[in-house]
Image 1 (cartoon, helix red, strand yellow):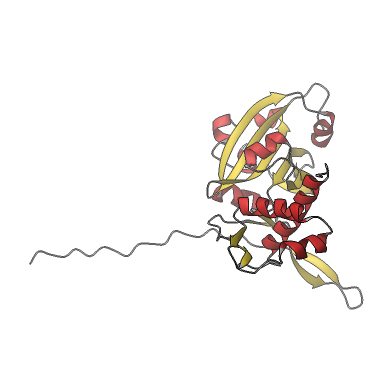
Image 2: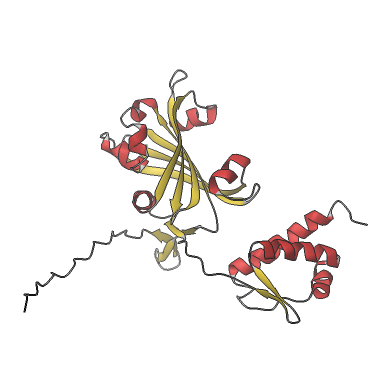
Length: 274
């Protein structure tokens, strides 16, 4: 008799195997243990194992070969993974804005929540300019961004501007200069709206980043809530050993972003008629 927990067990095993495939623990072309062995390993029925394998097969992560067994299949991805340098926030933000595409979902002036009001230090009667964007790389969405800026700053750019330029550049174009930021990184499960925008399943784990950017005067300029697909976004930090002998510790070092210059084409030689 099928119990109500069987689908949950099957999904748990599916996620476990999927993670092993994604991490490389299960290599491309590697033969999986048989259904009986997997059932014993996870203390479930063979029916549950079949359900988990069917989910993997549905995503083309395994291939069943008659008489040979089930093998890991990791098709080469044509989509780049965005690599973010956590220790160099501003350079990374601007460079990412230049090298990825954006889809602007909304652009409004709102009465912010208490949390946003506190983060931006807004007066009770002040509004914020709120935008929701999705960033894409190679046509595939990887981030869902909710940004709030004080209305007095947001009035310096238009919806059309935000659809084609990085937000931080627009803010600084108005005469302000970003000087510091505070950010927190955690993990959340995707809601239906976010899942639809990022083309993922509801409940998929996401990297969650919350950042407040401050100007030279110490006043908040922007509050960002960003959600990233972990299969398309990697956080990186470069470290070096610093300090005196006996008090040495790891300190972050900022990576220098360099934009590639377009290559010059060689001059075309004109060939005279013979």
